[in-house]
Image (tube, helix red, strand yellow):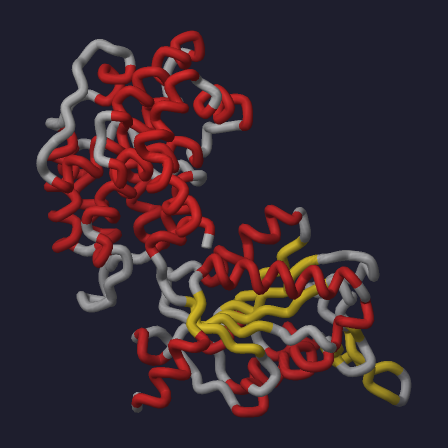
Length: 374
């Protein structure tokens, strides 16, 4: 790729959060006026496997309460798109596939996943629906539906068929790039294991790395989510856990992660520190600091409800003794946890100790919040 291509790719590159914002805007335009249906460009999401292309679409549909029609084109033939020919008297009619939405007032997203993994005959079958939102005279997509497609690039080592210029010209193209901060914002509210987040903060280059054996496990947003599920599992032996983690993120990074977890297990007990049963000690090693911060944010909300106020006081007092970067990061994590509702967050920020905490760390906290929201 030449320098001009590099600049063009960077210009079109979008973080998952940016893709989400564009999708939301496109949907709002569709819903504001049915006449916009043919003017709103369908989106083509490019990116490596595991970056979260389809997940962004799925989660936005869930948030907005609209339907998602997830069409895995690699599992389809052209007849599955258009329907079956049926002889009738002196002509041939078509029996339309039952796949497509029929309700005129319905809303949602049609996601053509794996578009670049199918041969030209299947790509041709979706041309008309993507451009004109119709299948001949048989069918027209309701105006409340947005067309989105997703696919991998040949450079990622995935199955990829070159897209014809005619099909490419129908889309607005976005390159979805992996972004750790964007993923961590999502992870805080998705019950991702705190030590997975702590490890990736310590080793951000391990978030998405395709330099190893791509035919085995390698680290991506998808595989780190699954690694979190392994760490949440009860009853796994240490050996089984090591094998599963290495199978998900690769053996080299799996060993790194296991070493990180071993050190984390020797740290002061965050639960006891919050309960006032153990004095606060902040480690000197940077990896151990990330582990302690993640554990404090997690355990703040995991314990008896009647002891929550005591844990909040301890949490804030501990934060006051931390360097501002770590204190602000821990507070943001705590406020963004899956378990936190408005009542709990208000208990934290309205506590008498919080004002003193903001006097010490408020500037750094506000700066981190702005960067996290950007």
